[in-house]
Image (cartoon, rainbow, N blue to C red; front, side, top):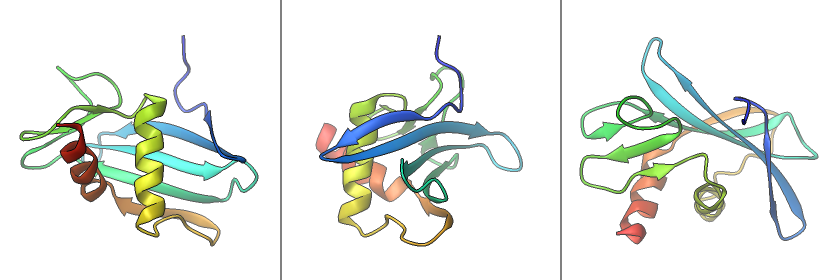
Length: 119
């Protein structure tokens, strides 16, 4: 059984990425995907998915790591292929950070792009 918050590896070309999925209930209900290069643990991109009108994050009846919109596909952030697609889209948009720290970005615009190519 997989332990929550233990980073998983994703290799893209010669770069090893580590990623985790998390969920918080306070003050807002949100799910997040954190990505970082293995060699640089202090520079992280955190894609944040907040629950809101038309936006669904993990929780009943959905599984852990599931995000969806009322008009789109369900994407599971625990699937390496989905994470790779988010990584590629974040890179294409210039969202991968170069400076130390946790860099939060709204993940819904990326979801919208990926969900539109899924349908």
